[in-house]
Image 1 (cartoon, helix red, strand yellow):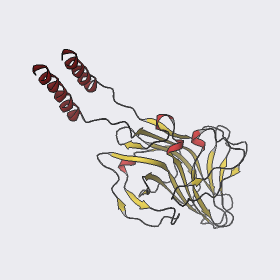
Image 2 (image 1 turned 90 degrees about the horizontal axis):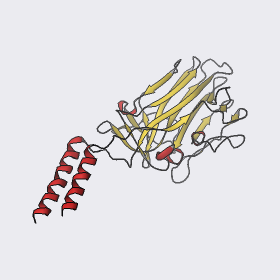
Image 3 (image 1 turned 90 degrees about the vertical axis):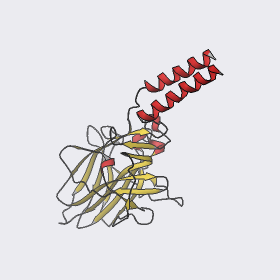
Image 4 (image 1 turned 45 degrees about the horizontal axis):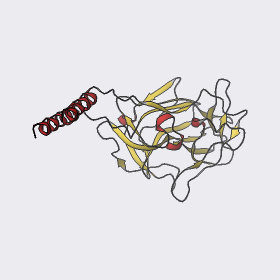
Length: 265
């Protein structure tokens, strides 16, 4: 009984004094050269189960690099291209729009291609630690860039549309409003129902994360493009549960009391 009591005490102390799990980088695109020359991306799409198909180029592409593997779909009228280009210090995603044409693209990283311990499983986005960072450069055309996440079988798109900046934008996804989105039925987003996917400052069970791009070449000038230089996501694996302090304390006191009761018996 003495050993059992000591073991319970040790477990309680360990739980109370346990370290807080830190968020980890699960997507890291940019700063690395994956292609030897500009490559046209695949059209992509969705399979019968609603899962996104490969979107990256089929040749001269380093698919061994985890964050170089992405999925999704693109739709473009004649004259548009969706490229992965080499830019000296690292590749970038290029969304071209020529001659008064339009382009819509959805680029996603799935859980199978998450980095580190998050690979293969869902993640949580926490307001206190997890961010989405991206660097976008564009010309003065009509552009829309929105964040997209998948939870279970459903996709959600941010209500906020981001514009290009001169530096990296850091976004807290839990601070955004989200709407339902069904890209397998219609890639072009027009409207959706408000969705409450943020609970207690957490978006739980995310299995895909990425962004939506919609472009229109308003003036018909050839060569205009939206260029995404980097895309990074910090998240916490969903398998890691961090109890609230009050819950931890109650559990530990209960464990200690149970050990004391058994000793008296």
